[in-house]
Every structure is written in C-alpha cells, then in structure tokens.
Image 1: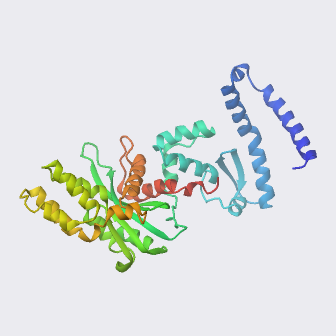
Image 2 (image 1 turned 90 degrees about the vertical axis):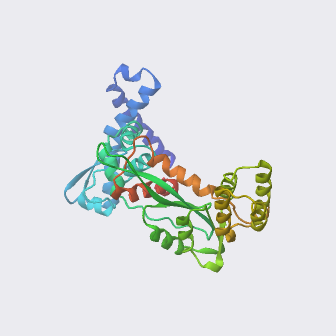
Amino acid sequence: MNSQKEKALKEHIQAIANILYEETSPEQLRNLETIEATVHHQVREYVSPEIGNFFIQKATETSAGKIRTLKSWIGELHLTNKQAKRLGVKSYTQISPYLEKCCLIVSANVSYENAAKDIKVLTGIEVSAKTQQRLVHRQEFPLPLPDKEIQELSVDGGKIRLRTSLGEPCIWRDYKGIRIHEQVTEAFFQENETLINWVNEQRLASPLTCIGDGHDGIWNIISQIGKPNSRREILDWFHLKENLYKVGGSKKRLKKAEAILWQGKVEDVLELFAELKTKVAKNFCDYLGKHRHRILNYSYYSSEQICSVASGAVESAVKQIDRRTKISGAQWNQENVPKVLAHRCAYLNHQLYSTF
C-alpha cells in the first residue's frame, strides 16, 4: 500500500471511529478490557461485514442467486448461492470456513459445551455445543502423509469409554495408536487393517524400526507392516524392565539381570533365573523366550544412537489423545469414535492450522 492510499485509509478509519465512539456509552469505556470488547463488537457488527461482502463481490464477480447468511469470524455475511459455490463454501452450512476451523481447533481440546463458551469469548460469535459436535461429525479428516521416509514407528493401545444407557455400567473399548517418530500420530478404532494399509502406503526405510510392548495385539499389527527381512522389531526396554522386577526376590539378582538384559544377553538371564521355581519367575522366562528376537543390545543401540529402544513416543501420543477423549464424564457413541479420534489426531498433527 502506497503512502497516498494509507493516508486516505486512515482518514476513513478516523471517520468510522468517530461515528462508533458517538454510539458508545461511558460504561463501555471504563477500562481497556471493555474498550477492546466494545470495539471488537462494533467492528464485527457494522464494519467488517461490509468489507467482507465487498471483497466477496469483487472476488466472485457475481451477485446472482439466492441470498445465504453465514456466521463468520468477521460478522454476519450475506452472499448468494453462486458466490458461495465459487468460494468453495459447503452447501447448507451456516458457519463460514474460517470460523468452522476455529471451532474445530477449540473443540479438539475441550468438551463441546466448553468449546461453545470459548468461541463466544474469543470471537464474539455464538456457536452452540450441538453445532460444535455436528461440525466434527460431518468433517473429513484425511490421514496425514509423512513428508519423510519412515525410519521408526511404535504402536500402543488406548482405551475409550462408550456411551451406555442410564444406570448401566460403563464400557471401555480398545483403540490402537501409532506414532511415526518425529512426524505424525494416528489412532484407529477397530480398524487394524486400515492402520496397516496406511503405513504400508508410505515410504518405509530399511531397516524399519518397530517398537512395542509385550502385547500380542501390538505385534500382530507390526508383523504386517513392511517386509519381514527389513523390519527391526524391538521390545520396549521399560516394559521389559517392568516385567523383570515383577519377578521379585533378591534385589542384587534383579539388578544383575537388568544389567545383563541391557546388553541383550537373554541366555545369561535365563541361566540366572534357572533355579527359581516361582510361577512369576517361570512366566518371565517364558516372556523372554517369546520375545527373544526382539531383545537386542540396548546399550549399544542407545549409546550409538542407532535407533530408539523404548516406545515412549507412542505412549505419550496416546496420553495426548486421551486428554480429549477422557475428559471428566466423557462418553462416546460407538459410531462416532473414529471421527473423534481422527479429530484429535488432526489437531495433534497440526492439520487444522493449514489456513493460519
């Protein structure tokens, strides 16, 4: 903008400010907060919608068609069906795309009821809790595309509470979370095949490091990712250590076993525990045998920074997902769970910020 236009703009703004000031009560000027709220309301009510409608007219070069009214971040907008179509506004929606995105960002973190309150404070626009919910359910959240070759991934399970009839006990069901290390997070509810197919469609490194705990369901998924000869499977170190200390008994023996396992020497640990006859010791030895090929020299791989040796990345991701899905009192209709998980993951992957 050149200096002449800037000067003219300031003169017009000053004239607008004078008119708006004359319509302002002394009560609305008592402190900076009330001034901010008053100016924001007046601009949204009288100024920005006119500018918005002017821009819409210029951008679409048409005024034909039936008039539609949209709630928008800049106030109430009036545009025709043809204008809406040219600008990519969805049919039948009463919320502008930018305001919709603001709602999705807020409701990805808090309940729909609190999202309605937050949007009212942040924008001055009323978008009810029911509308906040409908915005999520009708939204398409495409699976993210990692922008780099996948070097490491980890898989873990999470739980979500399903809605039940009043008086009936709550029901918790599993979902699977996956973290593509240093890239993206996703979650799938009863859609293991979709998870596997999505990962296999990406560029996978060789070797591909896959980390998980001792749960069979996790390894059933990992076994279908990539090619067996290019997959480096690693049993999460902290899960291994946790199971070791469940054996109990001599602390000296447990410390020695930990040091040996850190070197990946499974046979030496089995020999160390050979004399123990307790059920928990036998279970641990069976556990070591089952995951023998996933227990490597953790010390070497860690010190040389070859790859991660623990699944903390996905465990953290599941906790981040649960911060929304497990808010106080939250229950979800089973058919809505995939959309709720996709919404939260889209937020965590910064997919909702594409306009900003």
